[in-house]
Image 1 (cartoon, rainbow, N blue to C red):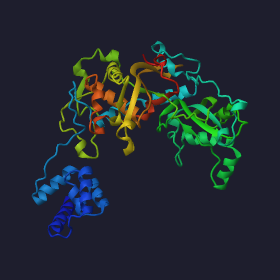
Image 2 (spheres, rainbow, N blue to C red; image 1 turned 180 degrees about the horizontal axis):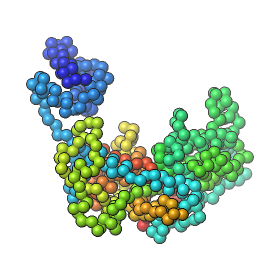
Image 3 (tube, rainbow, N blue to C red; image 1 turned 90 degrees about the horizontal axis):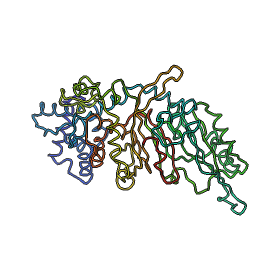
Length: 482
């Protein structure tokens, strides 16, 4: 929509207001309060005098803020108060180099050979290589032939004296599965998408008791079991020891039957590590005491710590235009200083120092979360206790037969809980802060930020994997990175 049309809407609204046609009612005051809180200062008047909210949002999406102000000032000789445009959050703490904007951080994260990581995870899930080969002697973890360790818990056996009737008689099964994130559209079941939950529930449909099977048939629903999971993973995220459970009143089911049913459904993409009977009180999510995530970040040439130490500071920074920084759709995302120096590489050792500051602390990670419900944006729901947070440089196997390898950074995070997309935002932000040469407590300072734009956009999901879930107290001796 042209600027002149917006001007006419604005002028009509002013005229109607001055003539008293639209007295300021309670409804208009509410609209004004909402507009001033959600929209730019110069846009709320349009929303106030034009009742249809959709029209105001459409105007805002079709014309940029700068064009709007320019057209207002030119055609109506009205001076709009200028507000400072931020390419990203206005950080107050200093660092050696300028921080990347959101767009620059996004480009830096995605402009990498992620296919190598995807293929590596696929080989690990299929048992062709072991994940623990990444760390060698750097880990306390005891490796086995598969590189994936089933639970140490013994199978739960119901004695005759413990047998009970009714709802207490149902059998609860704990299933540990490994799946390749690149082969599925995430864990949670969704219409017309290939998800891990849907595959498992269909596989377990044959084990549903007769009563539930009859109810499903009467409702015209497919014969599927109900599976509960320790933590839902997004599209592209791999799970090595994901824990889920389901229950049934049938007593003739053997754990091996469950394992065979799931493994035969999607070979090469999803496989069962272990199946065991557990008490009825066991819940994969609520019973868990900690979760461990790994993130593999492929390094480009010249980004390893060894190579970086040979380069001087002059080679570490370039002009803003040299880095792929195509502008956002909204012009206010552009950097006002075109010639500002931006870093082009980071040190893995610096990322490790940044992450170590999080260990042993109960902190609110609301600035590192994305797409959360309003009820989970403040207070205890945002608090997480990080047991272990480290980063190290590893060698990633591309083709063992041809002897092809590449360097990568691996990040290990262990906490009692994680917020939505928290791990990916932590990874991206720690890399951004390390490249900028921020202080070691930079991540801690970001906890006090007032806007989530203070942290970087989430890193790609391809590098993330849920390694395992613990139901006993966390032991630092099982850490992968020391």
